[in-house]
Length: 257
Image (cartoon, rainbow, N blue to C red):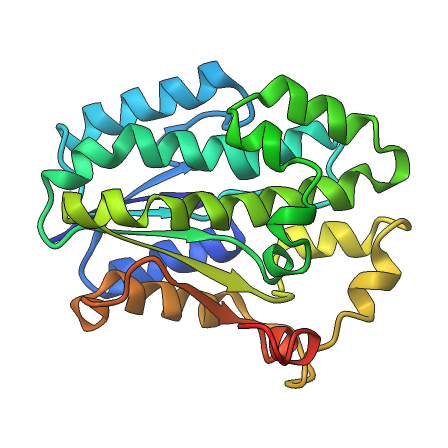
């Protein structure tokens, strides 16, 4: 029975993913701010270190899977928390838990990115240098200095950098025998999306973000693709980003893929 750690397990895509993996025979260690096997805060360096330590203790140093679903939306205040959780929280858990994954059976990891990751290219991402340098304070300062655009910059910039970080790790993780991929959802019916809809700054753009399949995804639809990526059916899928977005990326960037 595979042992898999899932962050953001208390709600939304994370909760649906945890259930899908349990249905597929995994034992799941959930991580969230509350209602989880490990409670902790990914927005701080200390919180991240404590989560890694608890994960290693609970798993006895061996994990078969890792799914990083925890994330914050553009409406989060202060906006600097978005970069801290979405990028630094994810990357530090990836790096901190790789040794445990190397001990697992057919190990795999999936990171939840976003369709927004492709809408702000790396070469135009104002946060790219700070993320690449691991400079959390600098990334926070850039976001907080962006005024009304800080939330959007933090979200799109962090998701773009997260996908890049995963792709940059593909060679080393492949040599380590651990598959690593990202999944890029479009608009999904989650508490996070509902919070955005209730924020006057973002509600209109969220309402107008309509895919060719003219509805929002259900969390279980995202979770089912995560479960596939974590399974042996995806044994040669590595370093990829899979879009589960109803076609919005194809419409937005038809000649770029």
